[in-house]
Every structure is written in C-alpha cells, then in structure tokens.
Image 1: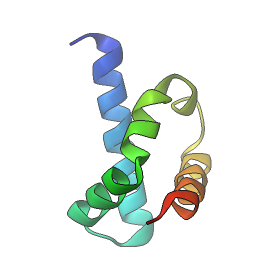
Image 2: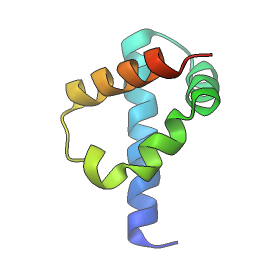
Image 3: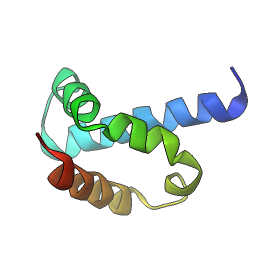
Length: 71
C-alpha cells in the first residue's frame, strides 16, 4: 500500500469523525450511512481534490452528497 493510499484512508477516517461529531451519530451509524449511499467511495475516489478543502467545506459537501443520495 502506497503513501497516497494511506493518505486517502486517513482522509476518509477524518471525514467520518468530523461528520460523526457534527451530527452526534455513532461511528457504526455513520459508516453504514456512508457505505449505503456511496459516500465512502466518493470521498476515496476524489481524495486528491477534496483533501485540499476546509473542514467546514467538507462537512457541507458531505451533507449535500447525502441529501442527494439518501435511500
């Protein structure tokens, strides 16, 4: 596993934690939500662009994505 792969994993973990803290949801709930909506893949596949954004911007991006892709 290369550095970029590890960086992407750390970034997705950061996003999960930030979303968890901003919503008060548990880790398992957030993981299920992100997995069921494809947000995990979106964050991982777009790491190069997304990791350069601010924490607040990322939270808004995740919320917008979830609003569009919720089951």
